[in-house]
Length: 132
Image (cartoon, rainbow, N blue to C red):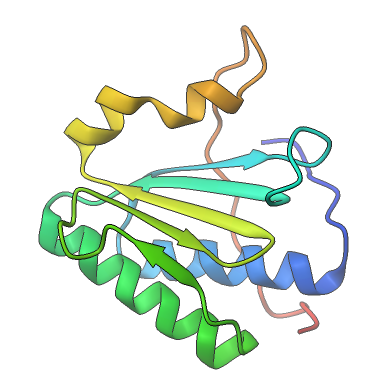
């Protein structure tokens, strides 16, 4: 994965905590897409999968709780009741949590990737030196 330049330490801390939370909750196939210069809705998009509707809902609930407690951000959440595709808008980072079949059907990350570039998983997450 290439090193991404983040707008601020807070943005970097938010993304790092999101990735750490997804790792702890065993989200699969995590991909980070840099949206800077491509969209004004967010700086980064994170796409991941859960193995079941229950896991997708649990990943989403824990993530929104952690974002609220760590950063004071009340994320907007769509789709948690169904558990097929949950969208979490945390401001500068948008997170999509899918069941694998739904993710394969919509292929959201392909809409934002450069032509000919395969999505890459994030590298190791280190939140020890982040300012927040």
